[in-house]
Length: 157
Ligand code: FES
Image 1 (spheres, rainbow, N blue to C red):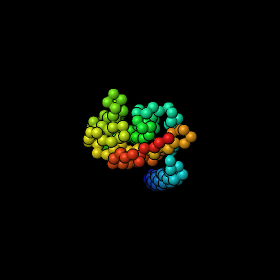
Image 2 (image 1 turned 90 degrees about the horizontal axis):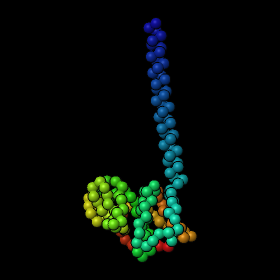
Image 3 (image 1 turned 90 degrees about the vertical axis):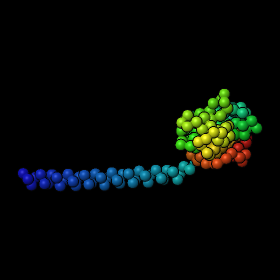
Image 4 (image 1 turned 120 degrees about the vertical axis):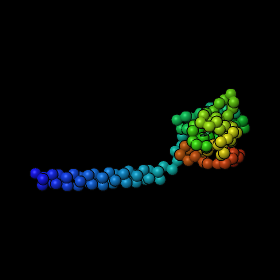
C-alpha cells in the first residue's frame, strides 16, 4: 500500500512538471505570435470621414479610437490623443470653455493640445493624419509624443 502511494505521488509530480512546462511553452508561443503580428501591421489607419464633414474651429470626439479630431480655424487638422500626459487619464473636451480638461488632477489643454494648466507638463500626443481623395485617415497605432505644438504638426487638405 505504501508503494502505491509513492508511485501516485511520483506520477503526480511528473504530471505537474509536464503541465508547467506545457503552459510555459504555450506562453512563449503566444508571445511569439503576438510579436509576429506587430511587425506585419505597423499602422492602424482609421477613416474619420470626408474633409467637408468637419467645420473649421470645431473639435470632434472619436471615443472608441481614443482621439479628438480638431479642425483649426485655418482649416488644418490635428488628431489629439485622449490620454492625459500627466498620468494617463482620459481628457474631456469642454466646448463652453473651449479646452480639454483632465478629470483626475485638473490639467487643461487648448485645441492644439498645449498645456494650459499643470500638473501635466507636456502637450497631448498627436496621431498622424493623412488626407487621400478628400477623406481623413488617422493612424491610431502610432501616437507621437511632443513637448510643444508647432505648425508642422498640422495636416491640410
Ligand atoms: S492624469 Fe491628467 S492631470 Fe493627472
